[in-house]
Length: 134
Image (tube, rainbow, N blue to C red):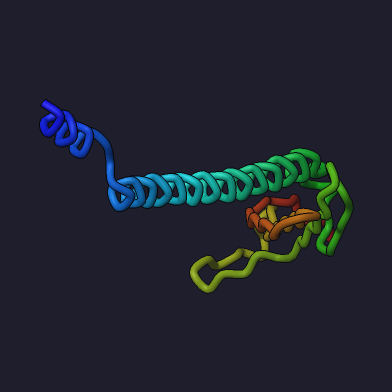
């Protein structure tokens, strides 16, 4: 009976090698999960930054003066901690022939919003402006 009991005690536990292998597998799984969480956090911050810049850009575009009041040139300012620049110029395209007698002039409006901590966002649009009386 003592021999069978010694045999049971010998088979009942884990060896040191088995424990180390199990510990290594758990460590690899935890490091993979940690890397995934870090990547998710970076991506979330990047998306939040883009959404902040987009909101500031929409604010600038929404606050543009009436089409007859905006003149060609460059304007700049600050909204919600974001620096913005508005460039208004005559719209030129080789595919569109502008008639000098048309009552409207096409303008290219470019809004650039720079975040204090991240990159910049640029949105271009076209507006019509009533031609000045000559």
